[in-house]
Image (cartoon, rainbow, N blue to C red):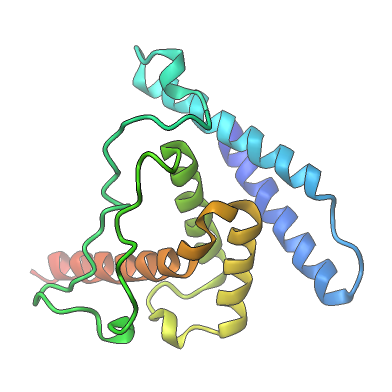
Length: 182
């Protein structure tokens, strides 16, 4: 098992332990421990990226608060229209004005970590084939709260990112099923 996978499991276990402690009314694990685990996880991912990349410069893979000019990943620039060119019916009324993040204001590495954090929690706690409007509200709120604690600079984007990821999962399932049926 890779270091990144071990740390991912540790983060999930910590979150489970923390939520169980909150439900029982006891004090949860130390937040400093969580921050340390998250830092180790990001460092392990950066090390894996440098191994996969081969000739990447060390400064390109470091986790730094200084923004770098990079192109956004496809996950960050997802189009939220379905194949017929219409908005998905479950969340058409939400404001999409913050689709494009200001690359100068946010560290791309931190944004990637935030996106991965959201995906991990959604995969663990929600049904990916059901729209966000039909998911249990307390689970959605718990994920949003976790994102706000870990990534305060992206707190206003948490719900939108969850919604986008769920849409992406449904879209990919439709595409996969479409290819299998032909």
